[in-house]
Each structure stands twice: as C-alpha cells, then as structure tokens.
Length: 424
Ligand code: RM4
Ligand code: MN
Ligand code: MN
Image (cartoon, protein in one colour):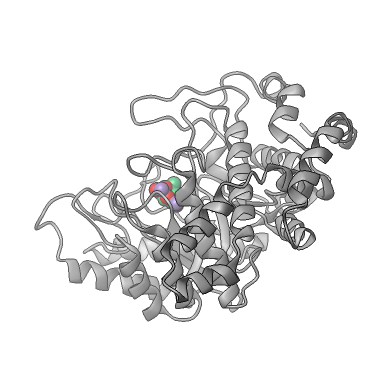
C-alpha cells in the first residue's frame, strides 16, 4: 500500500490555518528558527525490520493483523511511515530474520520508497532450525572454538549482505554471558569475545563501522560479557578506529545516568550507534518518550552539545535507530509515535541556550543552569516539528492521517488478519 501525495496535501490543507497560528507563536520566540527547521528535516531515524509486527512477550503473542509477510512488505511498511513523516528514511535489518534473497531487487525497492540501509544486525542469540553447534552457552565467548568460529562467520556473512545493500555498519549485540556464579571465567569470556570481534573487524570494508551494543542483563541473569558501556568501550578501543559503542536506552541498570555515559563516549569519539526506546523496569522496548521524557531530553541535550563540540553532523554522525517491540499497539502507529517523540525532543535540545548555560556553569549558578534546561524541555515544540514535516512534504499530523486513511484496515485486507512478521 502507498499513500498518495494528494492525500497528504489535502490533509495538510485542512490543518494549515491552525498550524500556522501555532507555528507563528513559537517562531516568534525562537532565534534561529530556519536553521532549526533545516536540522529537523535532515534528521532521519532508522526503523528496525523486527519492529513491524506485534512481538508479544514470552507469555503470549497477539498478532494485530496485516503484518508484513516478507522483507518486501516490511520495506513497504517503512516506506509508508516515511511518506507520512519524512523522518524515517532508513531501515535496519536483522539477519537471518530478513535475508535479502535478491539484493538488487531489495535495494531498488527501498530506493523507490526513499529508504537507505542503516546498520545490519547479526543474530547469534538464537539457534536456527537444524543448527548443530549451539549458542546455548554463548557465541563469540564460547569455550568451544568451533562455535566461536560459526558465530564469526555469521557476522562476516551479515557484512556481505550489507555490502550488497549499501549499508555501512554492523551492529553486534551479544546475549553472551552466564546465568550462575562460577559458570564462566570472566577474563576468558572477555578474551574469547575480543578475539572473535577482531576477526569480524578485519572483515569490515574501509568505509564501514562496527557498533558494539552492551546490555546489563537478559537473557543471561548473572553476567553479560558486554554488560555495560565500560566493557563495550574497552572492546572498541582495543579493536580500532572503525569500532564504536552503541547505546540502547533500555540496556542499563535502574537509574543509570545515561546522559553522562553519552557525553563521555562522545568526548572519546566512541559513540557510534543509538537505539531509542523507553522503559520503566528493564529492557521494556516501549514507545520512545512514553515513560521518561525528561530523561530523553537530558540525553538529547548531551548528544547535541557533545556532537557540536566535536563538529559532528547531527544527522549522520551517529547511527540513529529505534529498537522497540510491540505487544498491544499497532506497530506502525507506535513507530509514528516514537519518531515524533524523538523529533520533539531533538527540537527541544536544539533550543537550549548554550552560551547562557556555559556561563551559569562557570559561575556555579546551579539554579540558572537547571532553569535553562527546563525552559527548553517545557517548550512545546510540536509546531516546529510539524513545520519541518510540512516543508519536507510529509503530513502535518501523521498519526491522524494514518487513521483517516484506514491504513491498518487496508493492510489487513491486502495481507490477511493472521500474518506473522519475522522478528522478536
Ligand atoms: C536486544 C538488543 C538488540 C536487538 C535485539 C532484538 O535486546 O536490543 O539491539 O537486536 O534485542
Ligand atoms: Mn538494541
Ligand atoms: Mn534491547
């Protein structure tokens, strides 16, 4: 299914008057409004190929109908999202859930929808049907060399698929670790993992990056071999200039100061990838901004500040991806909400008065520093983001238009009520 341009134009026309009033109101208060709109238009968030179906939990799965049945249909879904918001112009693929059987065709289809291939994800946390050498006790860390080798080869295969599609990065997330004290020698596990990563790193093309994602727990509940940012940072430092840490917002221990982690990784030039989601308890993979919007703002504030300090381009200096799963919502609606939350928060971070903030910090004026951040956070940036969408040819209100156009109903008609997408 595709959304016709005329539908977007009609929708925008019907909202134009109200939008203009709201936009004029905020624009009057913002100094460099044109520059901010330009940045918002340029900012693109990759959609993961595993988030287009209703994932469910380990207790049950309640598919919502019309889920994409193959990679082509996943690309069509993301193409739809992008048509609605012009901010999700990339796809992040998980192998082997989404093997591109015919790369030329898949690449052309994505291009038709204005989509690029962001980071490729390998999967050594599940055994595939018929797999002899099991990942039950880990993959890149495994005490068995043949199993490590298998996991290394899988990652190299993922790079090859990525090259065919024009991707330029590989994300490695390992579930490796241990469930009980004594199960592993921590140092051996680290060293095996490092050696395995070195072999994968050696297979990266010159223009590629490797992102090493950390996670504190789950599915292993005693130790994880890339368990926190310090561990990921140690690996990527040893690996070399093409290796970077990836921060997934849900992968920390409770109350971790993620904004500080982000700031220091940027300072060291080692923040490469980002997985957006939100959580109340653990790796909940909920809609971005649905639980802790102020924390998201504080993180974005450090991202913008840290990237500016390094002269990095906000849009492509870091690989921006959503990593979420869906239990009770229409995944496409949820993804529209997530992208919107990201854009609103990015806009707020762009509004922070950095000169005044620095002065307040240098004067130990704690109150003013806090006020400056909260001033930006409490600004309603919806009209700014909507204006960026309008300029980019997207819908003023993507979620409303999605419902008006009855997209899910159309997808169910086309694909059936009982389709199940590959993924989590
Ligand atoms: C993990 C991690 C990875 C994602 C898998 C599906 O918890 O966040 O990024 O690829 O889930
Ligand atoms: Mn992730
Ligand atoms: Mn996760």
